[in-house]
Image (cartoon, rainbow over all chains, first blue to last red):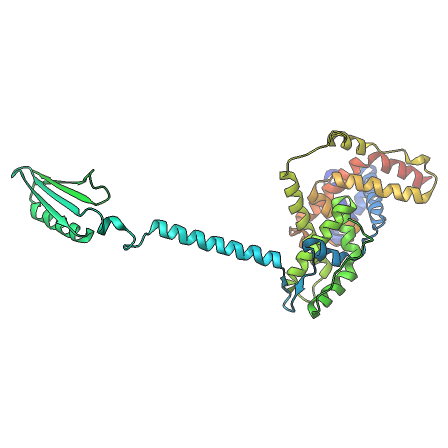
Length: 187
Length: 199
């Protein structure tokens, strides 16, 4: 074992944290090596100095102060070990309420109910406009709701489905968001 | 914080509280000593112990009966210390114009006085505490905790690894590196002391 290895193990040797074999090897090395022996002496002195440090005088009522200064009052402790604290409870309650409100708000915004969605029922009726370029004819359907409009549009689509027929689905700019669908067939 | 003022504190009437209080009274001195050496001043040590005791009582139902209470609280103290240190680091530094800047303070603490001129053993012992504490504070947190637990509190490496939640190899390395750094900081002092001891 070289000096570098011995010096890296000196702390553990000092604390009796090495195996018997390692201790024996280091003891032998220290007997012959002056530098490592000096290092050992210094570390030993350091350890002794730290061990001799006087403990500071601890403040009185340490435990009482732990609770008094944290919350300004004595905690209400139960046998289950929980500490009931008015401020802590209020904070948790507030957080839970805020999370619930946020969740509800986001849900309503993302998934509005059909009753509240006024444009499908109360606003202008849906317009389905079918244009055939060959026949140059235009049919306009007035629908009461989305589903009916879609069904009709699909029926028209099926009807016009022939080989070589291209279909395009447009959103009518006058009636955005499915208010009006124009199915244009071109041969 | 005034230590002499009386507190209007009524302890809760529960068997758990009594048990906890008994355990704290048994280990109060060691807990405060650890916090003091870790934080470096009595005010921070007091805050650290108070915070840790509060946390310990809150999670006292998690404490396994028959295991060492002091080791468990030491663990909480160390974690609280590391947390508060991180918070402090994140906080912006506010300085008064009347106070000297911290880099100058640090330079001041590195000056080690000549102890050979001190005749009294008592004074030497007091100074020893101050000098070592100043050197300890300069160590990185993890080295400091390991050295304090080993050399001041007298825990084994196994116990330290449980308290600091790290492997035995890490404990060994931290103690070794911590001592080497301390030896550098206290170089001249240890030299003087060695000469005094030989004489």
